[in-house]
Length: 396
Image 1 (cartoon, rainbow, N blue to C red):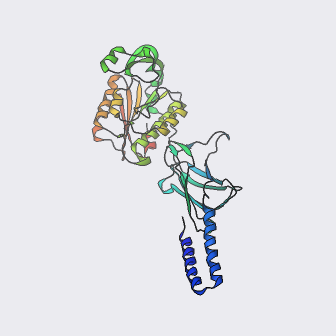
Image 2: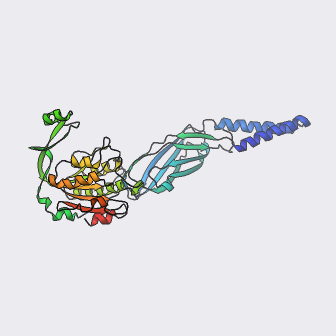
Image 3: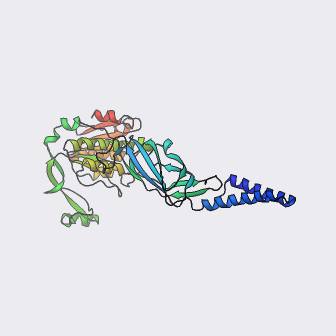
């Protein structure tokens, strides 16, 4: 499309034509022809000038990877440098190229990163970069980049939205927890865990999941419930640390990275660090159609990858998750939004043989009034806020 400068030149050519038509001066006609020829030539040059442009995006962290084949790992609050290689195929150059890279993992104030390339041709790609911070965990995909070129003299503007694939996985922030005194002081490490396994002792039932053996179907409960129900068996093994997450859509308070759910993710990652680095089998419990936790003990790599992606968009409240929780010796329940039904189920965990630590995450770090007097010998209570969760974790 023509710019304001092109419109001015065209109006000037029209004005000179009327002057030449009245005066019949030859050099004025020549000036009109030159101005119109300039507009035509620049327009022909500008057509399709952005078609051969490509953008390749790479990421560099403060800590280089162990080898050239391994991509760098990024965690919340890590600095990151985004490098853009802008190239163009063909011999025709592109002038005055401007664009905006919408960085999805950057803080809101740094999300829109503008860049400008005065001259781009096939023999010399432009190398650009900008520094920002991984503001929030998750798998982040870059949208198309809007490009604009005003041509060599700024007479005609070309626009294009260029698909520039780019994706970055940001792991949740965690505290490298080396002591879990509540767990260690109670002598659980010398006990056997009653957890789901493959022995002959039945410890409960649950809904059928894809991959379950048909031999495990509990036919009587299936007939009563009207859907497939399978038996869960005990496995004699050392203590497993189970962390229960509230993955329901309403199971959070606050917005952004300082919401109570995001704090629960950081607490779960910290507890996963402790368990996986002390050879304690670590499991996550919760319910979500899209982000159902794996029904196995997780490695540190598995903990990070699951917690980096999971979102609280489920439809089953925490109370129902606690009611259907398989019997375990010890569980940490991360309560990101306290509700009366969930608090009642917390009190009932001890009756099912489970010792528990309930961590209430509230915006101000205070214990909800509905949970006053909830603690007991088998149920310990802790409160944290999104701003002091590290201190609260160290005191456990």
